[in-house]
Image (tube, rainbow, N blue to C red; front, side):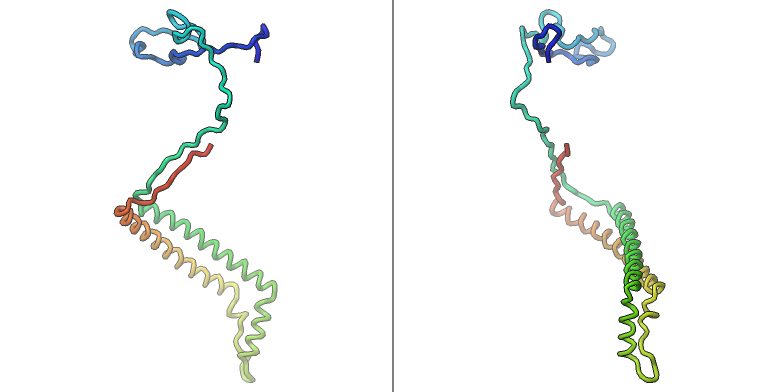
Length: 188
């Protein structure tokens, strides 16, 4: 970058206050002196009291920023917040289970699995007087969804209770050994 005369610009270092910044002598209620422009000489000489100081860009400077790291310890898990989060996650898992069971049943029914396996089972269990076990009526979609819903409700209750109990156990063990240590790094 060159100026209008074709020369390289020089950068003088400035050690004074930034624009708008108050120094120790500039307390509220005291005399206010407007901030000086960058590179302008301070009162009584050149910028920062140095003569002819020129700041030049460093060569080989680090181009990647340093990543800050912090070591933290999880000392306590609040059981009430663990219970709320685990309740919501177990409800979401229960809904996913019901939807997955319905989709799986429809795919298997479209492929003819129930009719084929049901025919084989009814032949194996049937006799001259009875037709045998009817798999298609036993594994109908409403019955499968009802059974899956009951299992999902039981899972919601159990997962919520176990997660809350786990928070209590963690708090007890963290009191003895100090808890889990984490190293967090800033992402830049």
